[in-house]
Length: 125
Image 1 (spheres, helix red, strand yellow):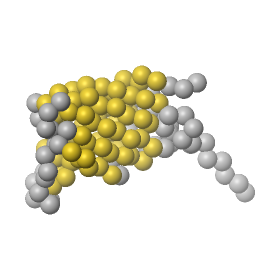
Image 2 (cartoon, one colour; image 1 turned 30 degrees about the horizontal axis):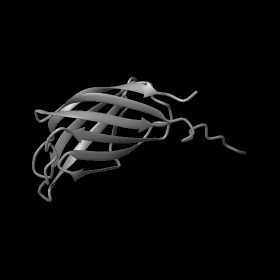
Image 3 (cartoon, one colour; image 1 turned 90 degrees about the vertical axis):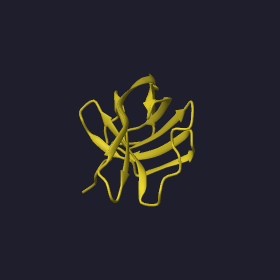
């Protein structure tokens, strides 16, 4: 018996959106395939300060069908840039939205932004 895996990285769609994180304007770019998504949030000012050891940025990416995924990896590369990667559902998304939360070991998550809709700007044929 053989199995066929239809999900590939061959088709990647580009998404963009704008919103605010803790009052700071941000531009979001995402590249998503059926099995993986990479998201970069670029802020106009310092929106992602260093956090205590027991706290972390907790982005949640959602597609139009309501599939909600948390980041596999996430981190602020500097106070104005947050990068995250997600494992995806096996279906190429046509719409996305991003919610950014602040989570910690001692408190419930706090929503910093979102959901921010992301619009597809490029889809290869």
